[in-house]
Image 1 (spheres, rainbow, N blue to C red):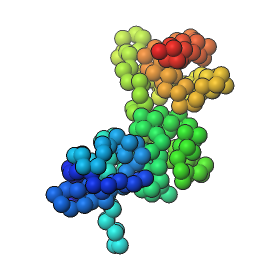
Image 2: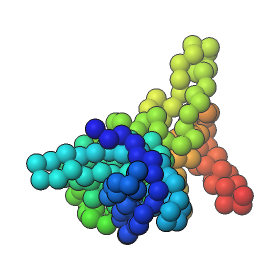
Image 3: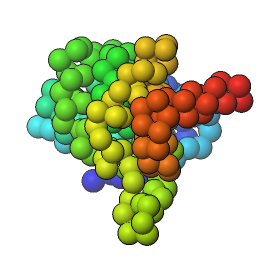
Image 4: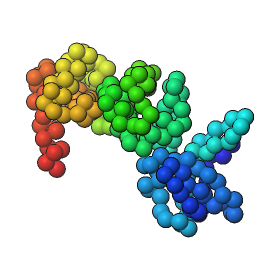
Length: 214
């Protein structure tokens, strides 16, 4: 199995690159995100490879970083998501954005990808939601619970209705669901549910305001 290729860029297209490795040209399918990070023709590159072998074809998929390759593997494990759709999702969403969108149940973010309809987006959210709990950017670093017991406080420990109420309030104020969820997840992990829904909304608005002004 081919796991990595190093060589010179021979040519490229909308969703592929031909990599010249010691005189042998390998056709590698890539996301727009990976292609956008590659240099020009004749330049040396290294790509992580996922190889799919079928009776009628051997297909290579290339990735600039391990996180993108890992997400490709997760996505194609979902019924109805083939390699083309997986690359389409990775073309419009980074690995961090995918994790946040799935954790937040943000179907709209997934619908931005070509070939992804409402039913397929719902299936991706449903099948992968339990696998992204620790992947949401900014959601790491749980404080010890009050009382010194050392228990972690996080979105999973919070009342689901509290998190959803805060996210919904922020969405109603015009913020994106994924953006709101990411901020709320971080707040719950770092300060718990202090102040309830109102307190979390105020804290989230402060964070969002600071981010907008940065």
